[in-house]
Image (cartoon, rainbow, N blue to C red; front, top):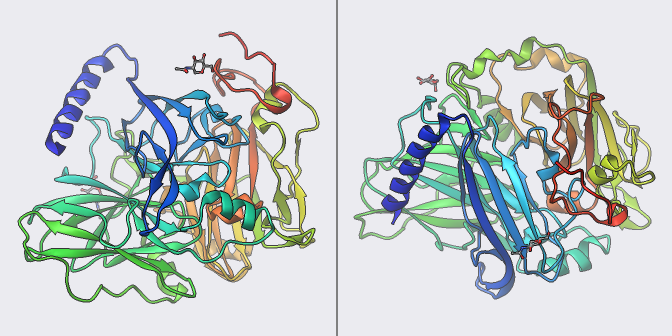
Length: 543
Ligand SMILES: *[C@@H]1O[C@H](CO)[C@@H](O)[C@H](O)[C@H]1NC(C)=O
Ligand SMILES: *[C@@H]1O[C@H](CO)[C@@H](O)[C@H](O)[C@H]1NC(C)=O
């Protein structure tokens, strides 16, 4: 079966090469039915969100520049949206699938996403972005393979495994939403952890002794950082959210909410089964789960103690984060070496500082950025912007630096100019690890450290070989600084990947604006765009 899939994939690759001659990037078509279904990930029955009957949802395989045409049929009783974490949607925030850019797909309706994975490679995931559906599943892996002629800086692995790991609640997503978040309460601690939708030893990765495999691990959980390790085996890091890394060897890897990593694992141990372990990080109570690494001719099941997790000191995790580097000579999505983009030699035009907080507003727990706790408008921002509908949002409704004032509710949109090169400092004065994501972009993680960021902190920036990625952690009482080239016009969600925080306001939209109003910079509204709120009944421009 697996070989068969690989073979058909190889045939498709060949077809692409042939098709490539006429210059048109290939298309891949998907039809997805979104339904509720019973799942038992932690041994008790609960209502999950399935895609074509599957939990987690089907894997998306694509090659750089492919066009993905994904028709989504919503059979839930609630409106639904899917977003594509780390897929850059160049010139096309219309396909981003978050409520700031798209009207939700109503029950019984469908919508077709047209996505091009332009100039991207690597490991990502998709997830349902609306109404806390992520707590019920509906997520899946995305692999973007290099084009056949672009060198990949490691030998072709014998197999390629997706590992979707994260925390999980036995409570229905609707209850989590209605009885906790909308009530103004934070979520309780998660009930456990899952690996590919299964609990303890519920999932098996089968390997042949002596061969090397790629594991693409994404933290698809809601509230906790995780650590990933395999009993008796080393992890060779090769890729982080589309960047090829220096191939450091680790015993275990910290993966924060929304992050994705690829490691190579060689099955170089005696023939038997081994534990694949995921445990929670920086939580009062450590949650752990396991899957099985099964050597194909093994007759000995998993045994022995689980390998210990690393030190619970932040310093350990911070030092590992700093050790993750770009391989400057390796190719990324294009043949030229990654290091030919000298991000460290460009001077940012300005510094934006974003400080998270957890204010009580009107007696309810909220989360905020620079004191602003985001509230959803009645009309997606992108739709309101396009039809020039007044009163939905105003640009500049969130300060670009912390104010120290008390928290307030606002539909917050920050302005930025197309092609601006900016420095963003995430300053975290809370006691919990933060995870920040920016849609539409990958950015350079310049540095991170404890305490307050000051201009003097720049002295220790990595100006040479940090990775470009789309999600970064910020340690407790610490800062993380990034550089980002705002070369993608659109309305882009900047958010906490902690899903309770995101839901209760720790997010905003960055409106990257070009006055040219040209198709060269941004695609027009798609003909099939759904219209809702104050956009209802308007006409999308005929093509
Ligand atoms: C999908 O929705 C469109 C309207 O947006 C409708 O015209 C079409 O018939 C629907 N497709 C199916 C198969 O239901
Ligand atoms: C960097 O990539 C090159 C391929 O361009 C590869 O040969 C080399 O081993 C990689 N270096 C490290 C340290 O991972």
